[in-house]
Length: 406
Image 1 (tube, rainbow, N blue to C red):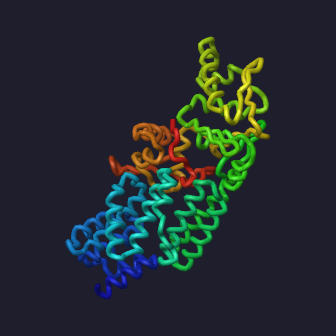
Image 2: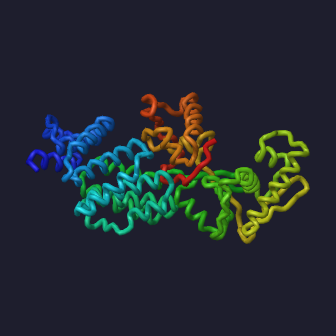
C-alpha cells in the first residue's frame, strides 16, 4: 500500500475526511475509491459514498476478499445511518466471517457492532446482545470501544437498567475522548442526554407527572400494579400479562387503572373500548364478555369487581395501581417517536421497526405530513422522511419491538 493511501486511511481513522480526500481525490484505483467513499460518508453525501464503495468492491480482484469485505461493511454502515433497515444482513454476515478468517478482527468487530445496532432499532434486544458475545473491547482501538459501549448502553436502556446504561456511557465517553473524533463524542453525548429526558408519564389517582428512565425503573421494581401503555402489558411483582394483541382488553385495563381506586361506569368503558358515546344493550352485553376475558387474563395479579354503576380494579397484594404512558400521546405517536432521532427514514424501514405493514406506515406519514409534523425528500424508493426531535420523546432505543401505529 503506497504512502498516500496509508496517510488517507489514517486521516479517516482520526475523523478527518477532508484530509483523506486531499490525498486520494483524483485517484480511481480500488483502495482510493474505497477511501473516497468512506470520506464522502463522513461528510454526509451518502449516495455518492455508496456509489464509490460499490465501484471499489467491483474493482478489487478475486484475491482481495478482505478489501471487498471492508467495502461491504462500510456500505452496511451507510445503510444503517440512512435507516435502510432492509439492507441484506446476510451480506454483512458473510463479510464479517471473511474478515475474521483473515485476522482483521477490528473490522470484524465493527461489523458485529453494526449488526447489533440494526437489531436494536428493530427491537431484537436479546439478539443484539448475542451479536456482541465473545468480543473483548480492550483489544480494539478507542473508536471501536466507544461503538461497543454505545450498543451495550442501548441494550441496557431497552431493558430499563439505568445503572448499567450510565456505566456503559461513561466508558463510551472515555473511549471517544481517547479517539479524539468529534462526531463520535457528539454521539455519546447525545445518547447520554436520553437518561435525563422524560421517558414516560405516570397516571395515578387522577394526577399525572413525567418520569425519567430511572424513575420508570424504580416504579417497575416497586410493589405497584403497573398498567404499561408503552408496551401494552400489565405488570405486578415480577408477573407480566401481555395484552399487545388484545387492544380492547388493554383499553379496559387502562381505563380501570386510571380510575383506581374508584370504579368506571359502564358507559365510559364502552366508549373507551368500542368507541360509541351512547351505549346500547348490545354494547353492554359485549362489555360483559370483554370484562370477563380481562378478568381471566389478570387473575394472577388483580380482580375486576362489579359495582352499581360499572366495574373497579382490585389488585392482589399491590399497594398502588398506576398507568405508565408515553410522555406525549397522539395519533401515530410511534412513528413520531422513531423519527425523533433526527435521522431520515424510509417508509419500509419504519414498517420493519414497528412490526407493521408499509402501507399503514405510509398512511400515517401522509397524515403527519398534512399536519406539518414530518417532511419528506426524494422520490420513489429513495424517498425519506424526517422531523426535528419531538419534545417529550425519548430515543428509539427505548421503543418496544412492536407497536401499534393506528
